[in-house]
Amino acid sequence: MQAILYIGHGSRVQAGNEELNAFVEKAKAAHPNVEIQECCFLELAEPTIQEGVESCIKKGATKIAVVPVLLLTAMHVKVDIPEAIDKLKKRYPAVSFAYGRPIGIESTVIDIVKNRLKEAGFPLRDGRPNYEAREPISILLVGRGSSDPDATSDLMKIARLVWEFTPVADVDVCFLAATRPNVDEGLMRVNRLPNEKVYVVPYLLFTGVLMKGLQKQLDEWSKQSNKEYILCDYLGFDDQLITVLARRVQEVLDENVLVNCDTCLYRTGFFEQQGAKG
Image (cartoon, rainbow, N blue to C red; front, side, top):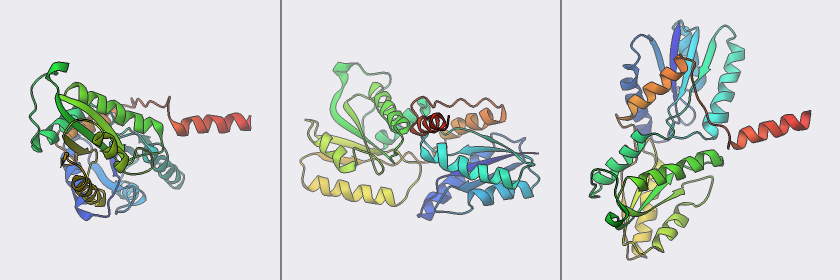
């Protein structure tokens, strides 16, 4: 029997975990023929991945489609979740596992970023702006951060797509952890630009301690700068993402998952290790 296991990151703030659960409940409806659909967390919350898998098996699952409910393809997606699943494969050899990909770079995500800007008071227009129509405004996308250049470069591409479809002068990125520029460095960069207004968009799926820390940093920068810093709402589990997640699940069920690993730090390291062994 087929099952779907949705894996979210997990948060120390319970409200963030509840957001994931509510989102997954909506996403389940896209696959009504799959009776067994469970949700679990990578870390910081329960049920764990092991508990999620065991719940599927207790309900009769012999095949489990594992889908990460994460924004970008970073170490959690490439290493942590596959390692956890590999251990469970050994424990349950009669069960087959298939693994999907995260949300990634999608036009839907760009639309959600634009919605968050509009909610914060940014005057959006229809269509793709020409250069002359751009306003002296900066946007700073704040990602969670990763040591994997594949993931950080994806956010750079998303920033460019936001620029292409938003009438602002500049779109830049920074990260909360694991890589540079960090948030202070990102704010320092936009502070050097002539634009007097800066919209800060947290590129995050759920609320948590990171959002609280970000607001505190912006408050500090507002005191020492003549610029206006506007913190937008985080992306969140927007209903528009349900269709994206439904496609990710269907890819796994159809055994048609496409993953780009050409610039993956971990893939490179793997082949270097294999070469050394040979």
